[in-house]
Each structure stands twice: as structure tokens, then as C-alpha cells.
Length: 239
Image 1 (cartoon, helix red, strand yellow):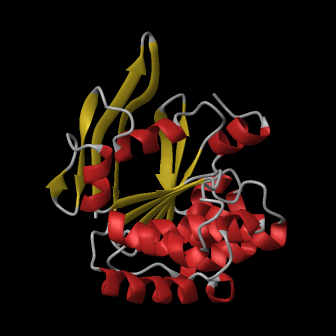
Image 2: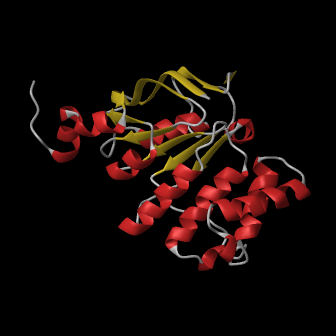
């Protein structure tokens, strides 16, 4: 579903994403870990077109989208859920999803209504459908952020540290949603610092440090890797 080849970005003398290549199939979830400043958010900015890349190629479902605008990439099938939820305070949950479906997926009003009701159920927001966005608790704002992304009918969903600020039980609830939404026609990339959240929901984990890919493997292999443990826990590692 996604094929990234040699993606790079520098700001002056500082290289923040350095020759990163990765593929993600439909039905797969890829976790992305890395210390602060590793280039994780910039990597997402390059995938969505917010920041133009200096080199590399982004292929989505066989189509080269490297030169497309942010809006065109949304229509092509890339959606992003942000760490800090962004809702309109006065719009209801249902209205948020209807707007995302009509503006992002470019579907008819009747199809947007059908898609909205489906997503309310799938993301556990049905009971809050008529609640204004400004009155939601944090977990439900996170659910809505995810549901808005799905309402654009994406082929690839980018989850940008969406568990930030949640309690342990709320993180588990979010993991359950991610696992339930893995389907053959959707690829997921989740940037997260909470390792067990990625281990419980992702097929593979990619570790970034100083803009470079350090390792990409199954969660058990990555979390046990000495270099990963050294970067996160300060543990000594052999030369």
C-alpha cells in the first residue's frame, strides 16, 4: 500500500530524515519509535506533503504521490490523526465526521451519512454522536481524531502519538480500536513512545534515530535490541 524509497530532508546543515526506505502492506500496522528529535514527525510531514522532501519517492497503492499537495494526498488516500486533537468546539461528533467524509473522501451527502454512522459505531462514539466537540473528554477527542481520519476513506492512516496524555487503561482502549480497524485495504503507521502499545497492535516496528532507520523488525525483536534499549533506557551496549 505504501512504498517509501530514499526519503530525505535537511534544514540547512541539519539532516532530520536521512535516506529512509520502508514498505507497508494493506492490513499491516507499522510502529515507529525513536527518541525526541529522531525525525519521526518530520517523516510524517514528508508523507503528507506538509514538508517537501529533498530526495526520495512516496508511492501509495502503486501511484507516485511525491509531487502532490497536502489536499491531493488526502484525496489520494492519506489521512493523519494528530497528537493534540483538533475539533470545532460547536460542531457535534456526527457533524465532524460528515464534514470529513464530504471534504476528504469527496462522497455524496447520503454516502457521508452512511459512512458517518458506520464510523460512530466502529470507534465507540455512537453515544456521543450529538455531543459538541468542545465538550468531549480527552479519550473521546482522541477517538474522534481517529474517526475523522477514517472518514476520508484513506488507504493509509498516520497516527501521530495519539495516546499522549491518556491513562494506562485509556491507552489499552485505543490499542483495541487500532487492532479492530486493521483491514486488508488499510495500512497504518503509528508513531508512539509507549512501546507496549505498539507491541500489542503493530506487525513491525521501525526505530529512527537522528533521522536514520536503526532497525525494522517484529516488536519482540526491536524491543529486545541492545541499541534500542540503549537509546531509550541509557543501557550500555557493546561496541
